[in-house]
Image (cartoon, rainbow, N blue to C red; front, side):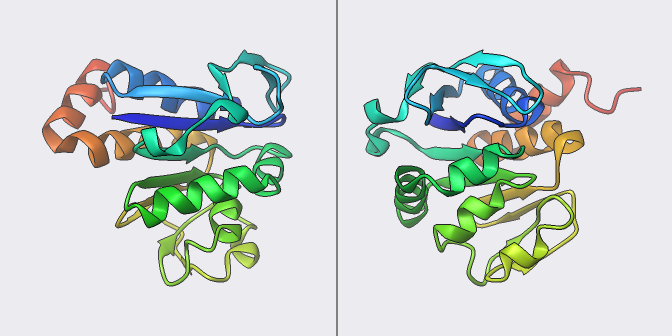
Length: 183
């Protein structure tokens, strides 16, 4: 398996990097992909991250999923990037994973892929996600779409993505490895 975590200036660091870390722990290949034209991307809290690739070098046909972190203005920067929209739509139409957390589901809305699908987001974004069936659950999965509420749920979001790709048994391995809800 191989997935993209898209990064734009203003991305929520914990949402992006938790997913990258936990997926890589489970041997899922992850490319952090910058949309800025440069590999260095600055997060919402001024943490600079060096992406693996830039979007101009990406052939989406080699990927099994795309992940959109939240954060502002990161989520709007991703939403307003036509190539991100096209790639997420291509993944969705190919029955591959599309996932977004926090404000990130606005990207899925613009891509036109949440119509009639159960989704969630950071509180206050409900009005921007009118095509979806909004839920206030921490993490929501509807077929090949996974969404989550916000930064405190980055671990749960990552775990659901691992479950999507590897199943329940391997997900339990990850939970044990990270001491998930052991205390």
